[in-house]
Length: 377
Image (cartoon, rainbow, N blue to C red; front, top):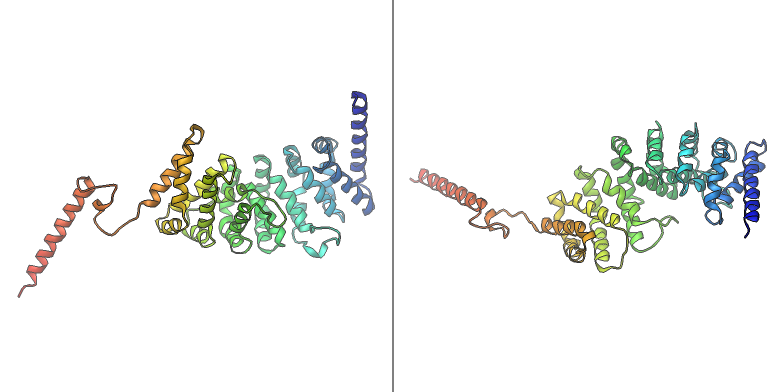
């Protein structure tokens, strides 16, 4: 294709997008609907010029225009267009969250569920607005920070995770997964009790553990194809210190699923980047911090899986992960026993601990002898 023809097509496409943006301010709803649909079409991944079109919409002022439509009868189509513009485009994500009133307008749509579903649409307004937040949170820490800084956002997301439609709850958990990647947002997430009030209730109902199981089966969750990373990230970066959190996760079957994931990686049947595996090891390490959880981890088969994993991670680039897996095996094999500590195979009678045992036992025996003498008739 000649440069002249290519330039002509670009100019034509730019004109169509500019016209659609201008029509967003029309007085009649049908015109606004069609304009938002046209922007969605040009931004959709199925369009061969999707990436360039997304930039064009932003450069031509389309994002503030779409955000203004969020408070109109065309909010459904505005949400669809904004979520598509945000997907995979960090600058668009920032433009959306930085547009005055945009986050508040999206929050205002959270209460609207299936009663406002168009018979021909697959998503409700509630779900579409949650998708915009989810997509904006997926790309870049700065966008995440702005989302968390909104005074009502975290409370609204918590409420939506409990009372929204099934798909909206899944999208909200996805958004929280993305927000948890932002180091600057972590303190706010913990202060708002996201683990206790949002993630744990989700584990009991639309479980993150169930999502992980679905991912290991290469399936979809609520129509969305997530990655195992989507589940491991919030589990690895939020609060495990409180015992009730750890116990809830174990009760939901997390130990067994982690063991399954480790065995799949060791067998080479589950491929992925090292960051995903590192997150899985982080989750296991956090659970193993509690001695009371060790028996469940052993019963799940993690010792054997971790040992196999350590054996295959012998390459230089994976040596650190192999060492972590081996350290976990050693930790899980250490079983506290109510006998002489010197009998543990890692110690011995000549060790300082063994000598301490001998001293203590001598004192106990001597004390028992004194007690026996004191009660003789």
